[in-house]
Length: 429
Ligand code: GLY
Ligand code: MN
Ligand code: MN
Image 1 (tube, helix red, strand yellow):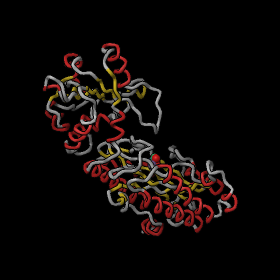
Image 2 (tube, rainbow, N blue to C red):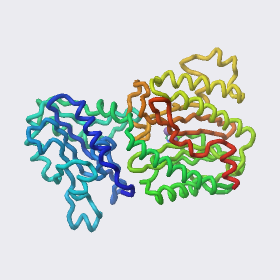
Image 3 (cartoon, rainbow, N blue to C red):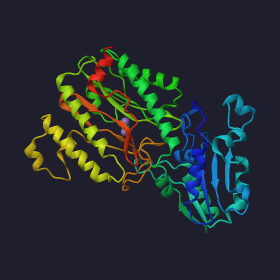
């Protein structure tokens, strides 16, 4: 890992919160992510399962966490199983956790090698009534590939058919959206690295530069500051490419007169930033670009004010839709009379602003959270309105990351340039 050690209290507290919510006499089992093949001779770079990291702090493949707070054998109430390294692994793959290092990273005293898992698990599981399994219930995406927890569930059901099986996900969905101080600090770090990369880009961009050259500047800044890399595939879309919401080709040349939409964020210690800025290739917006830009910025400012504890998803999105509608009328993109007659289920603003305004942010970029749960203090949400006008070859989106506190919110990206004047002034400095 490139990042500095994370305070193990984060993981110790998370485990404490998790076990306080499970049914009496239950055992919970969590697996690290699979290593996925990338080609005939390589795996993709390993990425830890977010729940596994949240509860263990262990950032290594082939690891298992077992939590059984009422285990009759006190040695096995909290146990970590790790891949045992050897001379061959050390030479070919490099360093793996020693038991001491795993204890320090996780705060878990009882660390064993993976080869001991079957015997130890079998010696305790039959004293438990319930087995908690961690299925992926993040409804922001759906996967068709069976992952390790699911495959292990099949095996466990065959071996232990009369236990009750329970979902860890319902507990994780309650815990993960409410960020602790350590998680907030890690997210701030990811935002700070993202800011520095953006300022670097502002000083770098000029007509004729290619989208991939901008991408290279960003990753340079990320890696030199110990980020693992991009939190997601960066979007560097100049001109009409900005209208493709998930544009990641990043292979075109940026031309004088165009606006570039940059949606990127650093991943630091598995925590993510998610920022969007839109900047003029030439260093100056045209009047029309500036009008659209300021409209998006006003929507972002108004929406940010609504990201407070107690707000409800649907109502929030409906309110943002109304503000956006007024801006689109002001820009001459929507007709006031047509809006008065619109079908409320299909509001006209969606022609120019077709995505949601916010999502939770954390260990997942679209973080695991209940979509029917009102916002709470400790949530980190994005705020990302945009206006996309295909007929003008113009797409503008702005995105900041907002922490909800008990008495309002804090913009974790408040120090990243966003006013059009400031953007222009840095580009021309
Ligand atoms: N970059 C992904 C998103 O903004 O949701
Ligand atoms: Mn984004
Ligand atoms: Mn986002």
